[in-house]
Image (cartoon, rainbow, N blue to C red):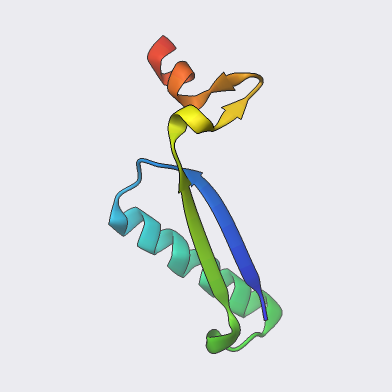
Length: 65
């Protein structure tokens, strides 16, 4: 029973998020053999000012460009 938990920066369209869910679900089904009803995909959108890498948030990087 795969449980796939994805964190992604906020800003994608509903269509992009739906495509992400579908693609990840398909990959899990084809690689693990799990039945569709046993695959769970959770997408968590994180505000860009709360996501940091190398001590710089995504919001700060976007402002700098």
